[in-house]
Image (cartoon, rainbow, N blue to C red; front, side):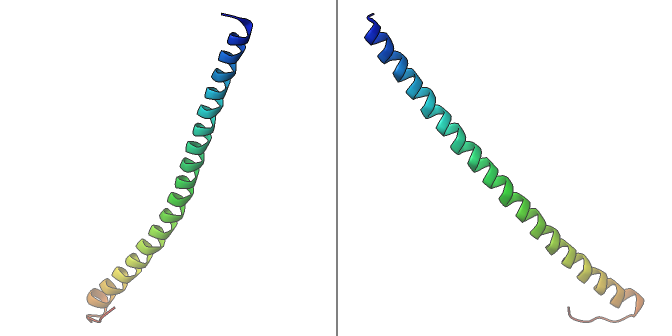
Length: 72
């Protein structure tokens, strides 16, 4: 193999490595975005569960303590 062919092959290999690195960066960015979205979803779910807990508590208080049934 001539020096020129060797350099060309090495250049192609470097290009392939660069392409693979770009793909990894894109995948990492996507995982980061999914992580951020998941954190927001967890906060929203926590707020919803907090509301449900409050409503259930109000219902239990109304039924057991006060002997009342009311719509929530």
